[in-house]
Image 1: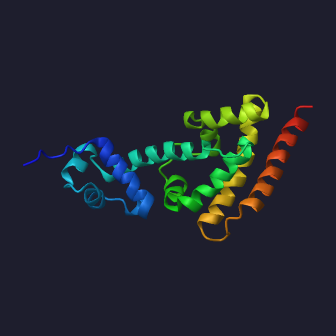
Image 2: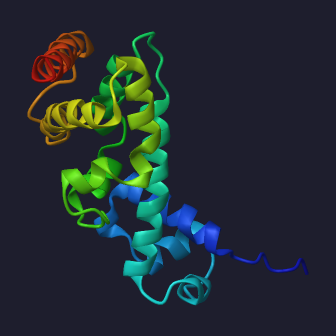
Image 3: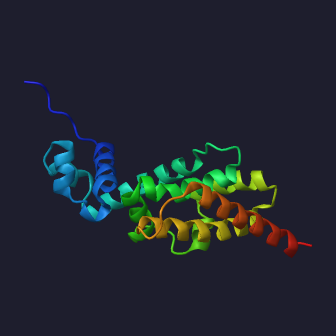
Length: 188
């Protein structure tokens, strides 16, 4: 008889992430993760005392995944690429978008907390280098862009707008140029 496979904490988190990705975080429970792992609920509850703890861990994995997704830019224009990735994320990963932005699991309570979070450092640093602005100016541009792209993405994920990359790229370029121009005007 082969030895039983030990279900690790990472295996449980990965399974929970996949469940959230496939069906939505609201459907995440021990029985579904058990089925995904082909085990009993015992190893799941051994690693996580509550489903809320498991959801928080799956959320942390999703946060990392989202950052990696955003930074996988395929255009020469890094700023346009990040914006397009943000807006295409709900097209490709609608359940994860809702989990990330509409589930209440975010540690940060406001956009200002998000912009100053450690998780955003790679994105802010990349933007700062691309725009040749100081860190505070970069954060101001980020806030403007974040409000725009999040609104666009939310409208798309709720099926109120079709994803049209060419049109979105035009709008992003306008917002990006306008935000930088506004920062430059303020600093004259």
